[in-house]
Amino acid sequence: MNWHVLNRFFKFPILLLTSSLIFTSFSFAAPIDDANQAYGFGNYKLAKDLYQPLAEAGDAEAQTNLAQIYNKDDSLLRDLPKAAYWFTKAAEQGVPLAQANLAAMYLYGEGVEQDLWRAVDWMLKSANQGYALAQNNLGIMYRDALGVNRNYEQALKWFELAADQGYKPAFNNVAMMYREGKGVSKNRYEVIRMYRKGADLGDPEFMLKLAQFYFSVEPKDYKEAIVWLSKPELENNPVAIENIGVIWGMPDNEERDYAKSLEYIKKSAEMGHVNAQLNTGIIYYKGLGVPVNYQNAYDWFLKAAKQKEPIAQFYLKEIYSKGQGRKKDLVKAQVWENLSFENGVSAGLRDSFLHELKPKQKEQVVQLIDQCKGTKFEKCD
Image (cartoon, rainbow, N blue to C red; front, top):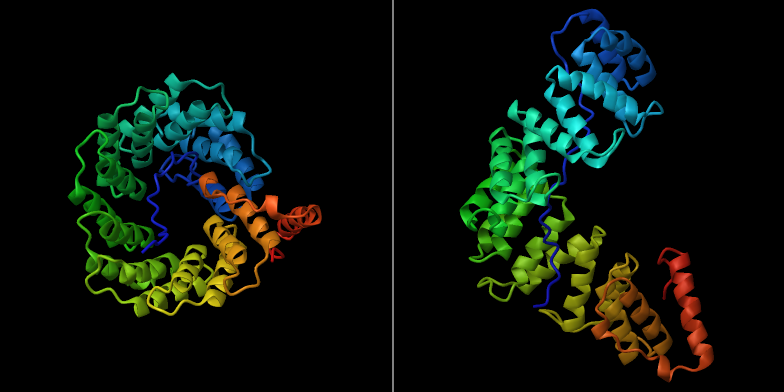
């Protein structure tokens, strides 16, 4: 069965420039409380005015939080050079959050001139204090050769230190190292252990990753995958629902049940999930456990095609070029052919009908494509 499964295993990017406030037991307790309260309510102008004298007096907490105000994307007070200045002041006093943020600014040249050596130095200082975010970031820097030579062993070391503190992005990064065999032998048990750590914390993303690993990597375990996909946290997750349907339709599933497969995939499709809409169309188009129904296939392919799903667009080309449940129409076939190619279908699958079209029909192709794009794929057919 030619399923198109959404089976994505994300690599977390560097988590930079966190907006979390730090709260410490430094002096000026009452003013700092007022400043933190203003920050919490989104009154950044007042918070800045309250933090400023404390920061100038050397209060590391105020320096860090003032820097974060200047660093916020959604703040009218955004000023990256000032953010870097105050992060530097706090970093020099040993605040790990400030050190990690300052490292990020040097890494990308934001608010300061790019300096990879300083980026690594400050991230290492923060990581060595046990700051999990910095440990995870340092792992990414070693894995992706950001400011340092690529070193998978070092990457894994820092990822595992962050994971040991319960830092969820590191769970994923450790899992990917063992999954891909980078710096370590591939290890199915370690991949499952890391995804399970996140899943046991009630994180639906890790539940989904764990389930997808069980049903997509040999030796497959469909029953365990369904256990995790059926968790209450994923009850209304269209990807999880579709994946249950895919499992029921897998050719190597000894308990394969096409009726259940269609039930779950169609349910996900009705929730607007584009991959499930495509798969529902394929079920009806190929007659997988149901009679071939080109009209139903067309309806679901069209829904997915309007979401720029290239394979669905390619199937619409097939339907129009062969007159399957629709009147044969080479103009519309060419329209969907062109759109599917633009959206990612391999050029090797192209089967242009332009040579069969008259000049006026070729103009219609161009007009229909412009109309489709101009209406954000609402009026394409």
